[in-house]
Length: 178
Ligand code: NI
Image (cartoon, rainbow, N blue to C red; front, side):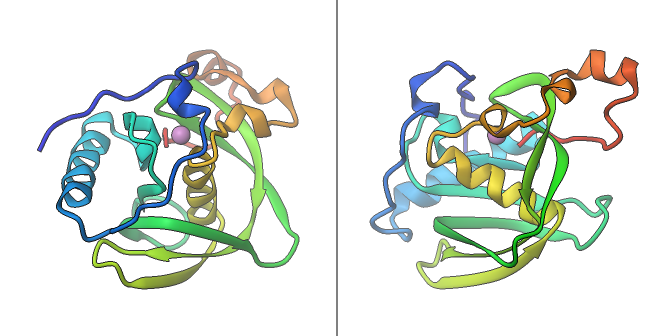
């Protein structure tokens, strides 16, 4: 296991479209995931996409902590994911990103989605997600298409350094970096 270096906004690996994982059960994928889990724990975030650790593959990991409103979701490995919005309801919520440290902004996301993909065992699975859970998955999967959350911001008055936003009382949620 190893703690990997996290790419920051401006690095080209964060702008590219990642490639599908050919064999989710390959030993190098297992090693990558175990390093990503360790890296995420060290960084104190809730999600991480492979391009954020300089690996341009369609693989993300995430969890939803217990203290979040709604359901708790255990650490999930999602490979070659597909997201389908359920309904057309969108909602704003504060996001941060481990690749854009110290900043946060309000981003519109689908409120209800179904996501599907492969697990580390190579087996397909799918889940319905709502609210924060849906938000984290949409944020992570955006990384696979080279999209960082500032590109989705509509209201830029909410975007800034978390330290400053905190002074203005704008960080109503304890936004985690993903
Ligand atoms: Ni991110």
